[in-house]
Amino acid sequence: MTSKLATRLFADEVRKTPSMTVQELMTRVTEELNVDFSRKQGYRTMKKVRDMIEGSHEKQYALLEDFCGELRRANPGSTVFVETDTDEDGIVRFKRLYMCLEPLKTAVGMDGDNKMFPLALSVVRVKNYDNWSWFLGLLVQDLEISDSSNWCVMTDKQKGLLQAVRDKMPQAEHRCCVQHLYTNFKQIHRGLALKERLWKCAKASYVTHWKVEMEQLRQESAAAHSWLDEKDPKTWCRAHFRCGLDCNILVNNMCESFNAVILKARSLPIISMLQTIYLYLLKRMERNRKSMSKHEGLLCPAIFEILEKAKQEQCMCIASYAGTMKYQISCPFGEQYIVDMAAKTCSCRKWQLRGIPCGHAVAAINRRHDAPEKYVSNTYLKNTYLQSYEPVLNPINGPNLWEHIDLPAMKPPTYRRSAGRPKKMRKKASEEERRDNCVNPIKPHKVSKVGTMMSCSCCKKYGHNKRGCPDKNKQTTERTTTSSAKENSDIGYASPSMQPNTRGLSK
Image (tube, rainbow, N blue to C red):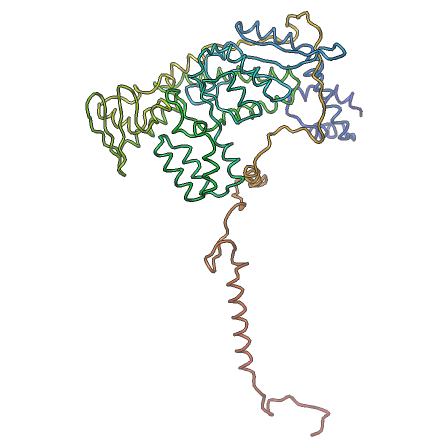
């Protein structure tokens, strides 16, 4: 059995099952043909089948310009182009690619239901300032951003990204992900109490509350307070965020979600990768459009739940009308806030930050016998959501129908392979690795004991169980000593009548 023959026999099965592994292919060949099939032959067969189905990497780079032309034809107004380099031998090689489709220019990264909305993507050799600046510059042009003061950019502080944002969107509010901030924080300052205190500082919505939480952090750990105080609060604390952006998020987990979706696609040749991502976006837009059209209500589902929670919070608040559409809100524990219905503001700043009435505002709205849904920002309305998803990503033809673009054949970029196995997954923090190791693949429903604080049923102390309890060992030793002493006290000298017969001995 050769890999060439196996390729011809099992190409259809691999095509129907894209997720088939080399081991599964080897098993199928051995079971159906009853022949020996080595792992090396399996890898060769799988590579030949993939090249047959998807095309080789080099061939796909040669067709990349034709694919970009097909995207521009299917979606007029889209920005799709490739930049190339010419090496010393005169060979044209791929440098980077930018794609911003016209139907995706109608939203701003997060839709009205607090879900991700991909705007544009790029394929580059390395993440650095030059590529980030190039990408953001094109994005600013496509979205026609003349004044970036009404924009919010959240990043995880990639190399060169901070400076690129300052250069291309200088007036935009630049936030950093608090989860990434905590990852750096816990490397020096560990403990659950400090973690909770940091998140309370980040979630504080007004400056006075933020100062109180920071003081609590200082009392628990002066070093942790100094470390956090060095960070600009405008990038990680809600109390210092700009109002009017309808966005109070602290983490950029939407980017992590998108990266997880395209993880498998990133291992494919470039055109196959872009086609897979394009198909995902096409299906996702139609799925979200269809599900929201069936939703009954004025607001998006996630926003409706947030407002319902605010309605429950207002039950403990008392609203007193002061005139000029202003209310004083009295809370159970002595807090007081001012709600201005005309300006749609609350002194706790939650209403201004996210565009959804807080519990204090809902109390004032109920005092006016009005509906809180009327005071939600237009960003979160069902109609606004449907307008964002109204443009359609048009289907595209296959390579057999692409119009040929008369340009020099493009070659893949020069690639210098690093030592070791290529990494697909991002490098996880130690805390994430421990959390992943807690899952038992054999019994995933069983709770792991990793990270659990042991308690002793004997001495009621923590850090050990009864098998290693020092008090129990001490009690066992004392009990053994007492039993031995009691046994010795019961042993005496036997009487002559009780002595055994002695045969063969004279008196």
